[in-house]
Length: 175
Length: 154
Image 1: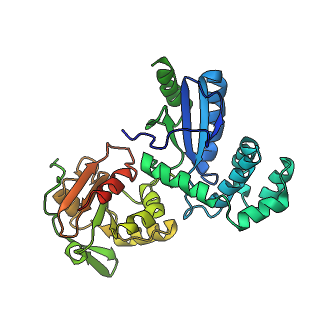
Image 2 (image 1 turned 90 degrees about the vertical axis):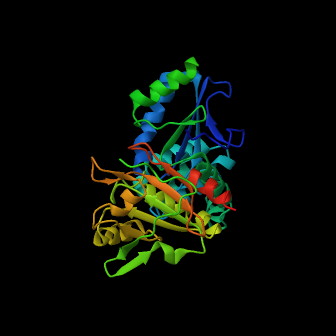
């Protein structure tokens, strides 16, 4: 059974408490429609489990299928460097059919980011290494498509729906 | 169902269409490692698609000088359309006639459904299987096993 080879650390973007009983890690791609579909599912899991669940998002852009995936990931990482990762992460997924410079500017403005800095960061690919490091770690951990979830470091292989994921999380909490 | 071929076995040679008018022979690739990825069918849902994933990871395979080859029972025209749509940059072989013969010879065929299982083989530069793995039905095996096997090649 594939396991997370890159442990969750303070370098990660995480929602929830570090001492939560269960950590759910998603490897995702902002342009992937399955990730778009998983977005409300993750929100529902977070509401359901409250402080028992910590959620971590890592980048896994499928660049040859999705032309904007890597740019979108860099926008989120730029936002992360300015303390706005989750706001931007959510907005990118909520608007995943409109990914592109116009949307990045719109989101940047909405979240109070410096648009000129964002443009520079994209142009100079300041956050590309971070995105690609996420990807490489994902490959090593057995990420086999997007989204791939890990529940307490174990790859979740079941159907990506509330019933099955919440069961896996519950089992992890009870362990 | 026959058994999956195991490490140490000489990889059975074969020649299969790689395009409607061109064939590829396994033994012609001697001298570099080969990754054989048997899979059930083209056109499975895109984001969880095993071949699309390998396409993304191609540079890592190439770092080991390894040649990746996908094989399914789909015909050469189907492979062409699929590869074009997914922008695949490695060959897909058509194990189409006689259907699944190569897959059977590697112990990778799933006769009840009439297609190959998701079976992976890493073959060394001399044509000997060094690692093999068959994923449970319905599970995409990812790439970490392949990369580990490539790293462990002598």
